Image (cartoon, rainbow, N blue to C red):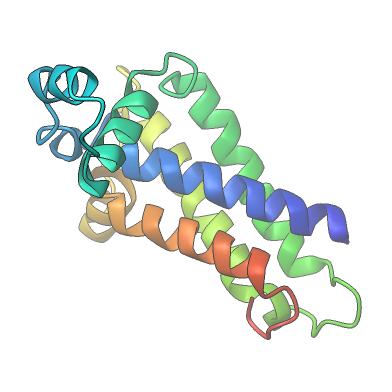
Length: 165
C-alpha cells in the first residue's frame, strides 16, 4: 500500500536523524562552540562552512525537548518497527513480495528496535544484559545505523520501483 511507502520514508528519516544527532552522540557537537556561533552571527558576510551548518543542525535537534523526550523516541521506535513489518507483508503496485522493499523494511525494523532498546536500557529498574553486538550497534554507537536509515529513506524516495528499495 502506498500509505506504508510514505510512512516508511518518513519514519526512517526521523529515526535516522535521531540516531545520528541524539543525546547519545555528544562528540558530534563538540566541534561547534558558542563562540563560533557568535562569530558566524557577527560576520554575516562570511559564509559558514558545511561542517558548521551540520553541527548547528545537530545541536538544534539535540536541544529540542520534543525530540529528546524518551516517550517520543519509544513511540517513534514502535511505529517505525511496525511500519517495517508491514512493508515486508504488503506489496506496492506490482512489486515483488518481501524483497521488493527489503532495505526500507530492515531500516525501519533495526532503527525502531534501536530506539526501543535505548528506552528499555535507560530504565532505572532495568537489569537486562544485552549481547555485545546489540549493545554496541543498537544502543551505544547508533550513528552507523542512523546513516543507514537516512540513506535508505532518501534513496527509497528517489527510486521507488527499484528492487530491494
